[in-house]
Length: 117
Length: 116
Image 1: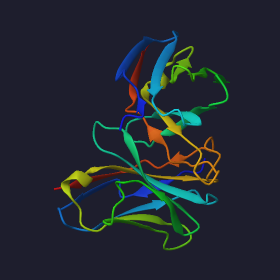
Image 2: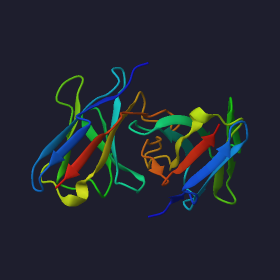
Image 3: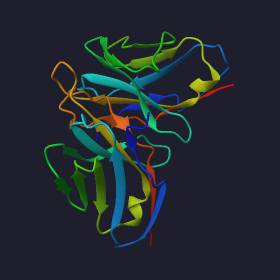
């Protein structure tokens, strides 16, 4: 079941440059998309999200872009910092059948970002 | 900042044994979850819990699994008879609301379960 795919297992970027992490999905019923960051020996930490009715959401150095026609989203980090080095998970979810949203998240396999000083 | 705490951080057990993984969610949160990540694979949803009952569960969450909120602060995941394939990092999470989906889930640091 590969509903959410992150095709790049790793990415290396120089400090100060832009990091672009990509995610593709197959289920057109997804309503929300989220990015989580995970450091070793810690649980995933919420980073940023976007609703399917939007195409961009920005929070400081982090911007998520959603292209619904391509079923693709990306996370841009600019400028990248060494402390951003972590595994980044893309996740998606949909409203439940009773009309309320659900926090059942479908995760991708993650991309390990290494920001070189 | 309040956090979700999980104990133990590592659990080693023999195949066929019962294990209980423990979690203390954030105190004013109402929704609780278990996820797991098998080494090298994606994080997978197991179960969500609200108002003392399961609100949703995945195909993974079969009869060998159960969850309980035995008191006002703890949330547990029990695996009745562990199998080798249950070896994984188990994450507990909680949220104040069940939705909209933008409501943040707060994850604990996980319990690494190793079944021998």
